[in-house]
Length: 141
Image (cartoon, rainbow, N blue to C red):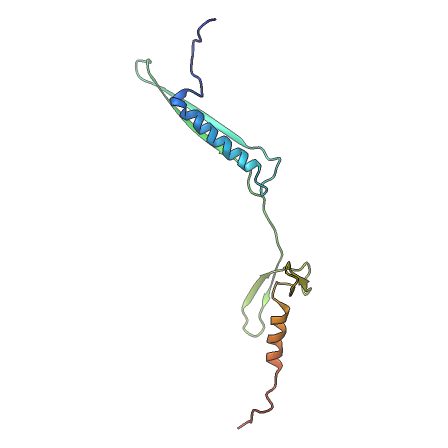
C-alpha cells in the first residue's frame, strides 16, 4: 500500500472544524427541504470554498474555508383586498376579502357568521340598529 502524496482529509482538517461547518450547512439544507413553505423540488446547494495561501518560501500554506448555502425560497402567498373610499369621511380603506366574493357572508371556523371582510354580522347589525333608533321621548327645544 502506497502512501498518499497529498494527505488532507476533509473530516480531519482544522481538528474537524471544517467537517463540523459542513454538517451545520447540511442541517440547514435538510430543514429547508422539509419546510412546507418551500417548493419541494427546488434545488438546494452547499458551496465549500477552500483557499490556499502559501508563504514566500512555499513551505507553509494557510488553508481557509468558506461555506455558503443556497436554500429554496419560501413560496409566496396571495389574497384579495377590497378597497374604496368612505363616503362620509373621504378616507381610503382597504381590508382583506375573507369570503370568496365581495358582499358574501360566510361561516368562520367557530361557525360564526361574518361579513366578506371578517367582521361579525351580529356586531354590524347592532351598530346599524343603534343608528336607526329614534328616541321618541326626546323633546326638541
